[in-house]
Length: 91
Image (tube, rainbow, N blue to C red; front, side):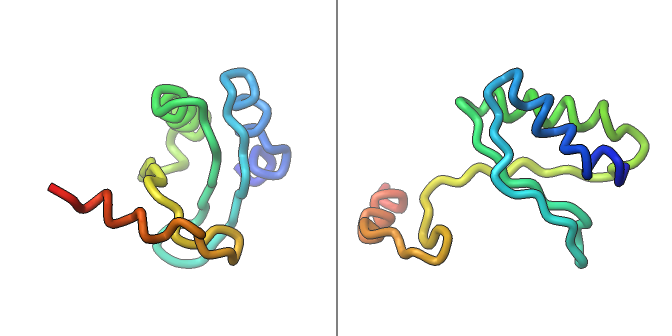
């Protein structure tokens, strides 16, 4: 598994379907690995998750796909249109 992470297999496979790996972290805590990527659509994001499940079958016990809806702070910079987040909470 370490070899696959080091060789960036996800980045190579993802390129074929428009996935760009932005960050990949080996972590300590609830999860051992966190990957941040961009995708053209949620369909491609789900496709890469399916590929990861096959690639790491028997190694990864749990995987979650989270979609960023509205950035609050990105790379230490506060979103200049932060007030618009209230639009997400209107009924």
